[in-house]
Length: 102
Length: 102
Image (cartoon, rainbow over all chains, first blue to last red; front, side, top):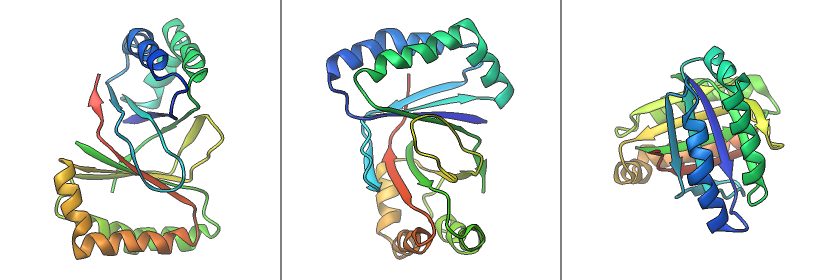
């Protein structure tokens, strides 16, 4: 499994952010054929470190190959470009990793 | 499901960090009775934002109540205290959130 984790800081305009996230961003991302799971949390409690996040999104693909294929597609590029719109309201940090059970 | 996410920056001493993480930290955390899954990734690729992480650990509990019970137990307190040892080699950031499928 490959995880794409996206962490959004407190938006400057919560209503505009939420509306765009719900009406545009989620539908765009859910159109990606390789996406296996998309989960969101708005109740993020920091335990250690200074960063406070407003929203954390977890997206899953089966493997790096299917993630790459989706990211390279027109829909994938549109989804990535849409993060620029969200970033006008919220600082965004994202990363890709492959969790392995220990 | 409740996620406990721990992000470690590049350790100052990788060997010491890895040895302690493997021999002490993982066994401590895996002793927590409510822990449902513990997965680690060392191959973390930043997509957006400046932070670079060396290791990301995902831990799962069924719900907030079982996580709280484990964190309040002697084993839970020992696991949390052990992060102080790891933090001598690596800046640590952690948070708790509850992912909901969208």
